Every structure is written in structure tokens, then in C-alpha cells.
Image 1 (cartoon, rainbow, N blue to C red):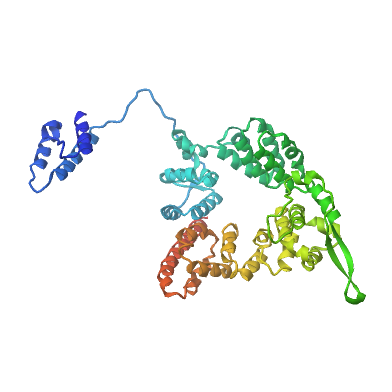
Image 2: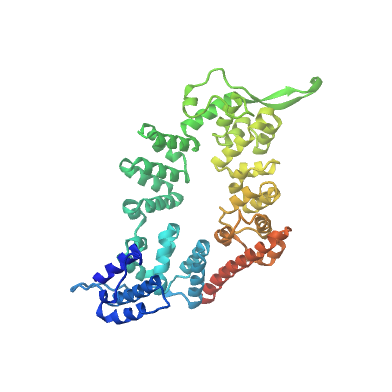
Length: 497
């Protein structure tokens, strides 16, 4: 089709330098092209665009699909599950139009739980969503049925829809699939996950080793110590450092035991006389030994303070305390968590060490200590929140919300459990007064955490600033729409059950 090259050249050079004559076009459209070029009211550019449009449609009409004899395609296997209802299907279409990943996940969870699959017309949209949202791939696979397995044979990007065992995904999957299956296995069977990693360790490159070591932090235990200790001989410094950091998070590891022994020697509980010698009080005493093992410092403890509020010795204490399980203090001082916290608060040096105790509580996931720290401190520590029971998380967040709104919202976004109405109202009031920081995407990605009952409370979240009210009115409408989609999804599957 030489005439099309002429169209392209004219478009590139401009109509001032080149034009397309009716005679250059196929006979079937030359008469129509001549009629266009005869129009007096149209300039050269408009005439060219009309001729180009005519030529394009002619060209498309003449295209025939490639054909090859002898090719046979297998048929998709018969579906084993029933299709979801039309009501559910409409909810899915509405959710996809809103591009809400949390609501899509919610819809897929309900669909999988009801043992249903989507109608074939929705498969391309869902499989394409799985390419973008890898965490939804397992759910999408469960909701797409045999037809999706068949379709994946024509598009390599949809291969995740094929059924593979966890070990098969670990052995032959993409880097992202291997990370996902290792993380999931680590949650339910830590020993199995570590054994898989040990079997392939020698074949992994440094970058892969680093990413896998991050996942080993899930359910880390003393059973991992031998493997992590052996990584001290790795060539990559980053891999060695990552393994050392994991050992520091493992009770019973040599480095943690070394730190505990040093603290047991350096922090003592002694009785001191009070004023006029009329009594005595029990107090902590912090004193490092004059000579310390160099291994303490080669393990990462820094000698010189980089914090103006801490002396060099205090800085060493801070690093050691944040690296030992809080339960150590109960054993060493023969005291309850509440008493230990009291001792630290009453000592000038100990009070500076409270944030280190909080970090240790979070590192070693000690829920008992988290509750004690939250109950006996007037300072807010965001690191404690994940370790608190849900009711205490709510009360702790509400208590300090005004002072630490953004930090508390940041953690609330990571929760899996829905927010209470009380906490949601505080979050929405703050967000309404900061619409640029908390825009529509904030509500979209967190709608699965918002209780439906808050729909009746949205008006009470209206900002006092008149300039922000219009923005909140639009945002409220958007929140209501997302809540309606949530309710629509739940109702559609419950009514079909």
C-alpha cells in the first residue's frame, strides 16, 4: 500500500511542502478524495486530515487476519464451580471502574469464600489486575476458574493463574513469586521455609539473598541461629550485615547473650540511703566495665555518641538495651515489667533508656511488656501499637491522637482490623482539615478499614474553616460511594448464599 506511505510523508513534512493528489490514491476512494479536495471552505490541513481519515478506513477494511492451516486450539476445561450472581458481577464492574484495590480484594475474598467464579467476560480485566497487583494473584486465581487457566496459555503475563504447588513456585517461579511463597510459608511453617532457602542458597545472587533474608525475619527463632551464624563467611558485606541484624533479633543468639552478659555486669539494682540516713531506696546503677570485649564493637555497637542528649557511655548502654529481650530485665532484676519500668523512670540515666526498652519490646515482639509500657508511660510510642490488644490500641491511639495524629494515622493504615467509629471520626476530622495530604487516594486505599456506621457521622467531621467545607462535602460523597460498594459486595454474596 504505497499510498499510505505518501500519507505518512505528508503528515511528517506538512501540507505546505507536500500534498496528496486524488490520483495517488486507490481508484476505490479517488472520487471521494477529489470531492474533499474540491471543498472551497476547507484549508489544506483540513482537506488532508479528511483524506487521511478516508484512506485509513479504506486501509483497515482491506486488512485480513493471518491464516495458517493445520493449527488446532485445545478447548478450555469445563468449569467446576458455579458463576457468581449478576448482582455480584455488577458490584465487581463498579469496583473496577473506581480502581479500588482494597474493595477488589474484598470482592475476591467473598467470591472465593462462596466457592464461586466470575463470568468469562470479566476474566481479561481481572487477570490484567493481577499483573499490576501481585498480592491479589492467589485470590484472582481462585475466582477465575478453568477458563483463566486456558487463557493464561495465550498470554505469558497471566501465567500466575496456573495452579502450582508452593514448592514448585519456589523452585521455578519468578523472583516475585518466590518471595511471595517464601513469605507465606515462613508464616505457617518457618522451618520448611528456611530449609528451602538453605537448599538453594549457594545458587542465589547477593541481591536475592538480601531480599530473602528480609523475609527470614518473619517468625525468627533460635532454630535459625546456626544458619544465620554460618553467613559470617559470605563474600557480600551487605549479606553478612543483614544476617548479623537478624541474629540481634534472635533471643539466644551468641551476640544477644554477649550483650546480656555485659548488661548484667553493668546495670545493678542497689539500695541507697535517703536524706539524713533515715531509710533506703532501691535504685539502678549504670556503670560500664573499664575494659570491654572488642567483639562488642565489631558487632556494630558504636563507641562515640551521635546523640547530643547522651554521653558516650549512655549511648553504648542505649544500643545494648535496645538489642536484648525485655524479659532479660525481669530475670536480672527479679522484678515484674511494671517494677522494672518504674526503676528506669526513677533513674536519670534509666529514664533516657526508656526509648531503647520500647525498641527492644518491638524487636522481640513482647506483648506483655508492650502493655506494661503503654500503661505506665505518659509518652506516646508508636512502636508499641502493633503489640497491643485491639481495644488497647484504640484507647492508646485516641488518647494521644491530638499530639501525634499523622503517626497514628500512618499506623492505622497498616492494620488489618477495621477502625472503631470513634477512631475513624478523629481520623476523618484531621484529614478533612488537611485535604492536600489526605486526598481521595487516602480514602480509596483504606476504605476496607472504615466501619459502615461512620456514614452517619460524616457531617460531624465537617471542618470549621469555611474554605475547606466544599472540599469535605465532595470527599464525603466519595466516601459514601465507596461504602455503598462495600455494602453492595457483601449483600450480593450473602443474598446468593
